[in-house]
Amino acid sequence: MRIAGLVLIVGGWLLAVGGLFITPSNIGRGLIACLGIAISLMGNLGVLNKYYLARAIWKK
Amino acid sequence: MKSRQTRCRAFLSLLGVMGMLGLAILAIPLKAEEAKPATAVAAAPAPVPLTDKDLSGLAGPKSEDIAAKGDPGAELTGTISDVAVGDAKKGLTLADVVNQVGQNKVAINFVWTLITGFLVMFMQAGFALVETGLCRAKNANHTMMMNFMVYGFGLFAYWVCGFALQMGGSAPVANLGGAYPLNGEFTKTLFGKPWGLFGTRGFFLSGATYDVGVMVLFLFQMVFMDTAATIVTGGCAERWKYSAFAVSTIPLAAVVYPLFGNWAWGGGWLSQLGVNFGLGHGYCDFAGSGVVHAVGGITALAVAMQLGPRIGKYNRDGTPNVIPGHDLAFVLLGCFILAFGWFGFNPGSTLGASGNGALRIGSIAVNTMLAGCTGSFGALFYMWIRYGKPDASMAGNGLLAGLVAITAPSGFVNSMGAVIIGWVAGIVVCLAVEFFDRVPKIDDPVGAISVHGVNGLWGVLSVGLFADGRSNYGGSWNGVPGSVKGVFYGDPGQLVAQLIGIATLVGAIFSLSFIFNWIVDVVVGQRAGAKAELAGLDLPEMGALCYPDFVLKAGEYGAAGASTVSEPAFAKR
Image (cartoon, rainbow over all chains, first blue to last red; front, side, top):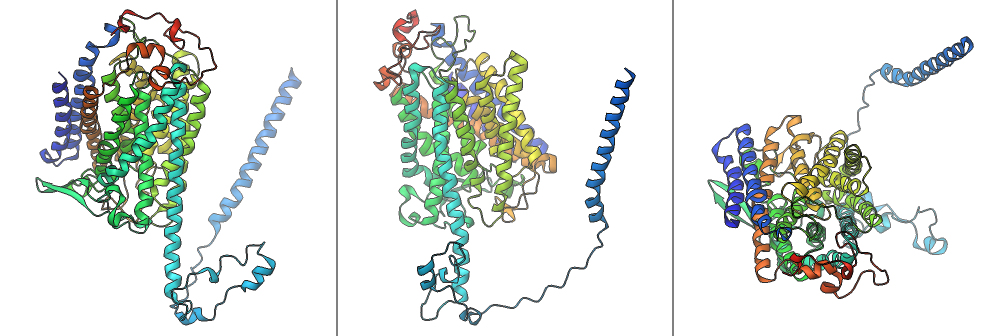
């Protein structure tokens, strides 16, 4: 699960940077960058955090 | 009744007359100014080139006069006699005078950069007070000692390799006399574009980097790195094993921070987004909302996630409890010290007070104080309206949030932009604290992730919105001619560059921090034991109480007196 989270986080970043080569338009690049940020956030606050929440001390 | 009405009318009429008179008085100089005829500019006399001959007749005050009478009026000190002469036989030459002018400029910039660096160093004291004040008394020694030693651990790691990776390939800094030895950037060409990845000169400050300009740059950059490192200690306070903290600081200071620092400030790929992809002036971060604060806040997020919440922060049903700090006076005093230090952080980032637009320091300082002020307003009013009381710790966090947010745009925006950026930051920090508490349930005792992480990102974004295109630091920024403009002033490309920077912080920097700290967790173990946490980390981890003469009272969540707090079942892990 931690690896999956990290893959999502890095994937989001690579998508944002890759957008520079996908389209020359500022709007297109901006939208791709936003999508990349959203994917990265989903990876760390969603997937990765879920792994640690499941093992949280207050749940034991 | 009638007489009262009459008196009222008379009073209003008097006010009206006074107002008219006031307006008339104000209008007179305006009108006079408007009425001024356009006078022709007197033709300036043609410049006459100076020669060494012109200087030969000049003489300074006699040293015997000064020796006999002193110089109480400061008329005899700092004259032609004080200009260094290259060749005593030739006497004073034009070259000597010009050299002195150049040295004066660099000297002003050295002193400015060093003093502002010292101010930033003093921010460590502010962080120590804020973080310790927001923690419980039983953890005060532990929290204070993390803030104290992060300076030493961070400095050492940065000297060994952090500075070289960050600034080893930066362009010469004209304000500091060039700093030319920093000329090695490891660059890879991908898809036909050069990508600067890290610097290669300046390890141990040895070789050619044993240079006066490089030393000044090192000191200034080092205290910035230490600010990022000390943010993490706040987010992870009250449950972080001290040995894990010590080890965890090293990769942050040696690798993670320097890498992003290089990409943004050291001539790396983010700064070249303008040159290579036509995105405004590339990623712009004047004083480090992203480089310093977001890196610190995001690392705090990665570690706090791995550590998990403190015992007692959440109930079994997942609802959060408030764990109040032990000293609000520490917190607010610390906030003031930080606000003072920020005058080093932002205006100091011109790396000089003379040349290349450095006189903008006045505007940068005013932007800094305005955003801090409106940040505290925003947070104070949000808390007052939502919870019915003007919360002191959140007002302090609002001040810091405003200062964090203005750090990146401080050199590029006007005062109206600064006011808006600060105000938004003050509200955002309150929303972010509530969000992290309730949704992902990430325990952050001092609000470091919200103040520095979230508002660091807001600061980065705000450059792409509010930069007004009026700054001029030597005619170009990041190799792109002209001044930085946000989308509200006509350059949407700048906003895209800032978004790429945010994606890099949230994606690459988070991942790096997470992986390094995962390794620390496996090797050292990140979290202190439950018994130690309940007892307070001062004795089990540090061997000494911060307040040995005080009898600490047990609170609902084990606020102080460990021995009197009943141990929950999950504490025996």
